[in-house]
Amino acid sequence: MVQPRLDSLSQRPPVPAKVAESPTLLTELPPADRIESLLMRLEQCFGIPQQAPDRLSPRPDLLDELVGAILSQNTTDANSSRAFRTLKAAFPSWEVVLAADPADLAQVIRPGGLAHLKAARIQEILAAIQERQGSLSLDFLRDLDDAGALDFLLSLKGVGLKTATCVLLFGLGRDLCPVDTHVHRVANRLGLVRAKHPDDTFAQLSPQIPRGKAYSLHVNLIRLGKRICKTRMPECGRCPLRPTCPSGRQR
Ligand code: SF4
Image 1: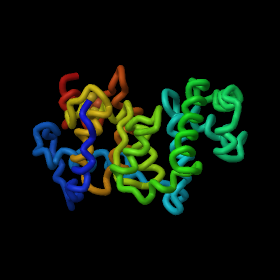
Image 2: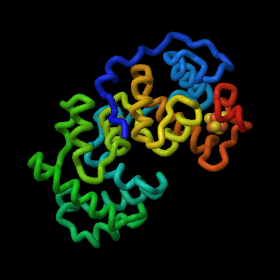
Image 3: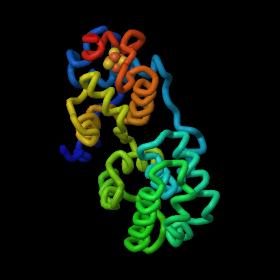
């Protein structure tokens, strides 16, 4: 697996003032123009994503973000949201979650699926944070740069690159594009990357993203992936990106 080159993120290209529309395949554009062209088309089709005001200032609790991301693994947004709501309603603090009977915790988060596995994972993560930081808080991540914050999160058992980058994007507003199954699939079909694993897609995609545009790219690639570029039956015939998509032209 290719390791993400976070040092290259600070050298990402600025957002261009304007990119000419072109039916040229993305893969035939100069590398520097590919993502700009894609961003423009996605924002024309799906809008410019904005973080909800209540998530901008103050930023949400980072442990909430991390546990929410764990609960979101291998389930739908609706189910993970339900599991998180029941968790927060049942336990008044993360200290109480850590001390809870694992079976009770699993019962509470059952709506999110894989309840026993996720309950164990959550308690292991909380225990590790408590032991290493002396308290159940991730606020210290706010003082770290992207690479430092990712290093810490990835050192926690059960926290992968997608989960860690979600915490940094949604919890800290960092300019990173988490690569989930949708982003991975669509980026490969569009020819932006050639990667078998989402972490390799992250490594190849991140340096291409103009500064300040990771959130927009992440949200809109997921919208495209969920609504049109589906896993088994991509609806290329109604896809606004088809003229520029090497996979779409072959279908
Ligand atoms: S043209 Fe087809 S393969 Fe390409 S992005 Fe659209 S739906 Fe996906």
